[in-house]
Amino acid sequence: MSTATPAGPVRLGPVLWEIGTGHRGDMRVPVRILADEILIGPILDDLSVEQLVNVATLPGIARPALGMPDMHQGYGFPVGGVAAMRTSDGVISPGGIGFDINCGVRLLATGVRHVDVRDRIPPLVHELSRSIPTGYGRRGRLVLDQGGLDRVLAEGAAHVVAALGFGRPEDLPHLESGGRLPEADPHAVSERARQRGQDQLGTLGGGNHFLEVQVVDAVYDRPAADAMGLKVGDLTVLIHTGSRGLGHQVCSDYLKRMDAAAERYGLVVPDRQLACAPLGSSEGRRYFAAMCAAANYAWANRQVLTHRIRDVFSRVLGVVDLPVVYDVAHNVAKIETYGGERLLVHRKGATRAFGPSHPELPPAYRGVGQPVFIPGSMGTASFVLVGRDASADVSLGSCCHGAGRAWSRTEAKRRVAGHVVREALEARGITVRCPSNAELAEEAPPAYKDVERVVAVVERAGIAGRVARLRPVGVLKG
Amino acid sequence: MHAFEDHRGEVQLRLEAATREALYAEAARALAALTAERLVGEPGPPERVEVEARDADALLVAWLDELIYRSEINRCVYPDVRVLAVTDTALCAELRGRAVGALRTAVKAATFHRVHVRCAGGRWTGRVVLDV
Image 1 (spheres, rainbow over the protein chains, first blue to last red):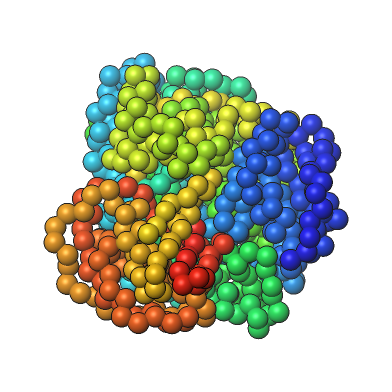
Image 2 (cartoon, chains in turn blue, brown):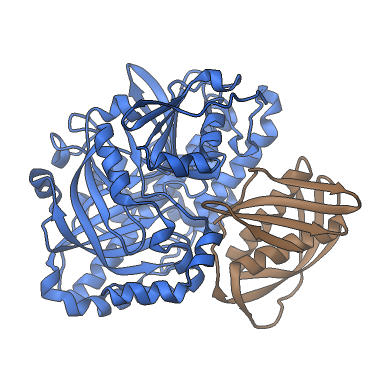
């Protein structure tokens, strides 16, 4: 590995830092980090910058490797990392997408005023916890046969709507890519991945996955909020989950294959987790097809969850209309065009943030911008923003996916006790359902960075503008 | 012995044992301890497992991934492991599963990031980062 120079990032602007290719001899492009003078501190304290520099060495990388304001140390790619490769000669790296392929966030509006149902929130959350399996390896009520799973992998959310009745056709335009990547090939997904995914549709999973019932407690952009159906005082529901065991297995399968094939392609990577293959190779094409299939599974998963949530709201509150505001992926690779060049954009813990004139936006958001979600930690605010056209130049149409971890999991468990977190949330009127005190401690609010500051950086960078702030009143965690 | 070390978003597992067989058995015990806060019931019937990889580091990843896959499919963890044979590139073991009474941490996969298996001074050591 080449030797790095000791100099740190150079500040190019109020929220933009750069490490040039002179920093290390194997860098093909610079590294750029979006952060203010406060957020840059923890970014420099962990290994995320070194990991982003490693990403900048990958063959075919076409633009600076980008770090979002919530960036923190991951494995291989940092979390909050974005890298775009030329489709002609660039590589695809499963580590640049992650094990939880198409982990993402979906927001539902409700039109229900919190003040009218305040005392029904605890039974609502209780009923949600009964209807939605949470936790590692949990099975759902829906078990697919091989043919059914093939259809989900190929067609994503559209299949569970049309063939299984989970949700409505009008949900689909409000999902990124319509909830389906057409390049998916179910045959690229291994038997092991299928076994793991067969009965996990409609489940939340564990770790930092969650379902939150929230109140819109501020609106900053009235026209955009109106387009999304968000009003101050209304309840919303935020779902954070992904492709479950199926996606994890797809990533593991192809990392192993690409690691084994590296010598054949003359690929040497500075971190073995950056195992990759040329996008045009058989391994690269097959992984991309499997990744798309797993992404479709995740959209189908969030669609089934949407149906279950609507059912609970109907039974508990008598509400039948919970429209989908939007659904974004934050672990995925997409083929997009920038400056007339087709690029494969890896987003690892980062989402799209397309501006009002982007042709991929659904009709409801043309002229408004793509909804962007930045969840805070459990118990703190989440933010809804809209993408700006400037994001294409600033960040390859990308935004951060959350507040970013400030503490390690070990440190969080050392500093806070799970039951104390639970009591503190409940004292603030937040109903909590989480079976593991250890996971509660790991996800405690102080374990994450200041989401308001992260949002401010996003706005100052010109990537997106805030639309609304959402405050949690109920949390369901795996 | 095993220890879980600080990592910003994931879990880093460090292993140490007197023999290579014991190292991989310890990895299984560590994974079970990380996943389950409490075990219930009696050990299940023996399961024979064979895993291959291109080198010793990749074998540790493959071994843990095998255990993660079986845990999810069989809804148990595997603290009870007898490693029958292990080389740089292959491992054969007999496992007995235990049901999980209470979950501690959901482990998605083992990563290749900073993974190593080494023998120095008569002691075997290993390190692997787990995605949780």
